[in-house]
Image (tube, rainbow, N blue to C red; front, side, top):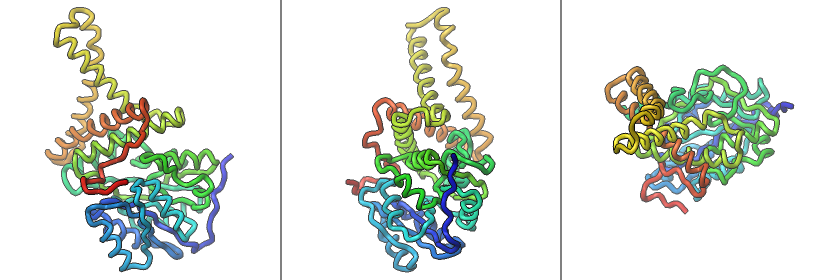
Length: 355
């Protein structure tokens, strides 16, 4: 049975919640797009501040001093689900709008989301994540994000019609339902949004995708940070498969299958080159190389056609395998040994004081 989420009284207001850690270059613009949202009723923005080492905390205090709608809560543990729960528990309004400090809300985003929540009586509604970039590398990552080839075709990466969804990017959520299902699981450091939406759906409520909602997302700025991000994300997805099994979508198993295919091709190639495998057996087993060969051709073909400059095409040919293999390798690690204390270090630097 599908349950209708409660609809607050008109003008009841919204609370925007934003985890923040080492976001000096993006925070001010992200906050600006939040404060420009057209909301029927009062609005506030709660920034959950992790132990930044780049001046982000000082910037957040300056922004809060300049606008009474901004409130600050400390998040010494730095984990995203902890930050979100701290912000939600301090919220004053019945609808929660999750915002990322690396993102920018489109004009009218909140008003449209609230109208959709009211219309379909959903507990959570999300829209399209439109990645963008400021450099050739970041633009290449954005192309990968915006394509099913890059991130596997989740509805919020574009192209899907409005309707029920497995999860929601960021999300505009009814606080009463969040409290009913227990907020975010603080033992999960990545994939916490997918797991929360699973519990919302299991409780009988709707999670909804509305393609009219759009959020600009700024990907990681370097190859090393991108690789660290995807290793951590894949590791936690492997952990979620350990915990929840078949409730995970089959698309999550494509990157680890690629890792296995690459490993098999490398082992076979070594055996063939060293002469340990020859003759008919070598010829027959050479079919193992076919998936990898097709993958390489596909990546090169997509990079040439999707990139808008030589540098973007070159980066794209590196970015896509980095995303797939990092995520897939992390997934296998998380599946076999669990995520344990795996942390996404792509937002951290050597001076970030984590507990």
